[in-house]
Image (cartoon, rainbow, N blue to C red):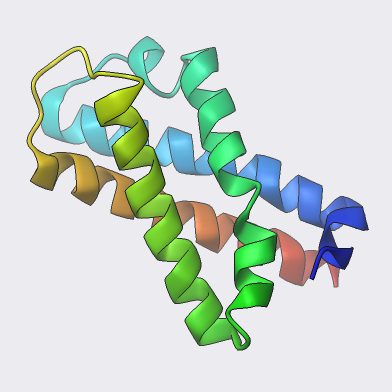
Length: 124
């Protein structure tokens, strides 16, 4: 289960998944509410936390037993954990609803997982 963490491709997938997911979240926020780049995509703290939330993904995928269940578990993790983080540790500057928060983080989860899986597939 933890063997994946010894592979460089796993760490590249974690970092790129977090960064690309964070940038995609900013694009969505910009399209909806014209949120400035520095608030999400260009914010080093948001980028760091996006990568940190990706670290358990390799473990979660292995824990799931099969790819579909593992991806579902990872999707739930990447949707719920950042949402709880925003509400408890990183209160957003604007007042956003839980629906917007969870929707935005679900979008982050899909893009981040797609980037993660693409890097892993390309690494062979």
